[in-house]
Length: 395
Image (cartoon, rainbow, N blue to C red; front, side):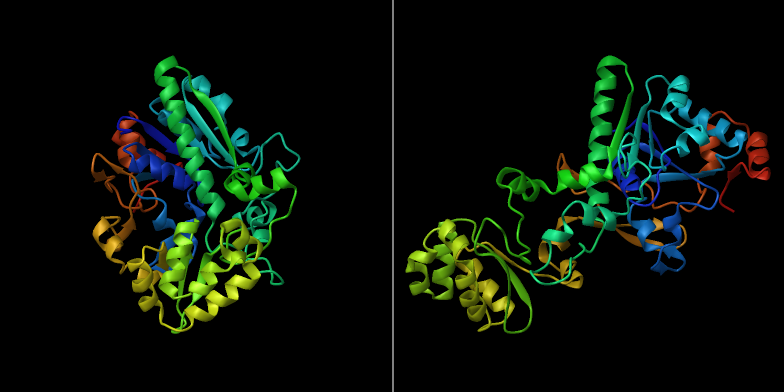
């Protein structure tokens, strides 16, 4: 869908590389422009035969070139690439793009209709402009950690960099919108996507409940502030399942499946508002009931009764799930060092097909020569750039 779009990806770590991987999955030619030592996530554990699993998760469908942008000759190479590109994505600290000569004001003189996306921790005009913005910090500052976990227990971090992912999705969406506008108007765009803004946006109804009511949300573990029962329950075998009785019809089905007729008729639990009000009475009753059978037996009973439910999977179970195995969501690609490696594909299904993996996550500088030749350099010029350390090519 984005065939013919050229993206120069100066970003590293997660939010930017995720955004550009999405663009690559959708057909764009993404050139990952790395420093001579590479994206730092290439050095992040765990490793599989010397390759970082972290790096491998967010850098497919890209070509790699390593350019020393601190050298004037390196900047000239980058400018040659900009001439034939549509999008530039970066997530440098404030002031670094200007110091390297890769800021929007410089690049739009080279390509006036360039779409330039800058991902920052905080808006460059804010009091926090220079503050580090690792996802852990954002999980704390967004209110997520204060609303996750259980009352009386320490704050809990979501197990992955949730707000980097959300920011990457917002960046990719906005870039595509800017490309659509450019097609209509011929105008480029400067896009700034702050991680902190994205994290607060990502808090969605939890943040809105506070804004509308002025009440701090409780820390409720797996439970929901507005629906009861809507949470995880431990079963006899120590495994957990989740039940989502999102309306009174499902509540009655749950009572029938659990054989809790008296509980269903209790006026304290007759409607969802009453169940929310009396959750501290109801939940212990349900917890005790779920201890009577193992997880999978309860799932059979609940699904037969039409109760929305599901298992709390370990990751090993996720990839054995019948849906996942049949979905085509997991595919593999041949990597130059590792052979066949698995990848989780872009989740949208377009015209009945999933986006293809055209390229595996690249080795550092793996495509430098081809990229330079496409930019109009001769073989001799490429060799000179490599010899002078301006560009690093895969050995």
